[in-house]
Length: 331
Image (cartoon, rainbow, N blue to C red; front, side, top):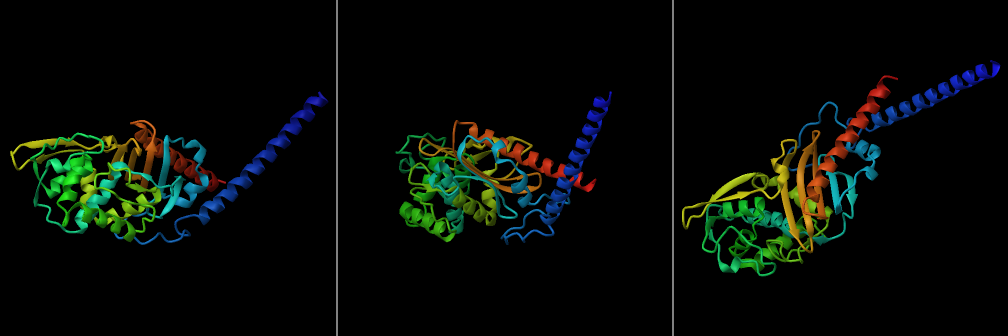
């Protein structure tokens, strides 16, 4: 009986020690959470377009970095960048400074240069045999002789990732394709995209390369171009062939723009054998504006699987931090 009593007392003492350690740990975490709160965080970098206001229960990016577990984020993309756009903090990065072929992500730069030159968007452009894909033999719904406005050619190039539309935009650029490529590389230099090179307007050439960090700079630049944001997230649309008067239907190449649980403000997909499957987005998750760049994703659907895993990982991290806050507040 004495032995049993001693065991009970010993167990109670050990239990009290565990509780004390837990309370000390929670207090320390509460102090850290307070130190990292929005009121004490460093000011976010200035931006050319306004970002959403901070919600009442906002979790600073520094806390996401501190309390997230990167080992739980399994991605099939060899290059990945997840950045809090409001604070300019990289929440997760993998090989983000390694330049790689970027396939049709190139078309985002194509659109930027076309709009920056202020060419008339209502001017018509004819699709000709000079716009065919001689490198990879890709097909297009834009037959030779189709006549589109420059606006619609941009829309088809961005949302449907059409290569003939992008080639026609470059061919009809002032002084032709060579001048267009020079302007694209000049814009990259202006934006500080130090690892980026452009060789054509469509992304079919393997000489179109950039790092994920550089692509984040390109995404930031598009904030001054609301038309790019609108076009790139258009789910489905029709454009008019002014030669025949017929309408041609297209769908967005990013299936996530159709998902109501995704809030996507910018989108571009890409694929070539050299680049693999690629995706870049500006999206809002849990009131947090994010930049997401995925390059060389294994499998046709893996870029979407990776995007959903990123969303689940971020939401889980925020719930974890809120639980810690609630626990600390109740002690």
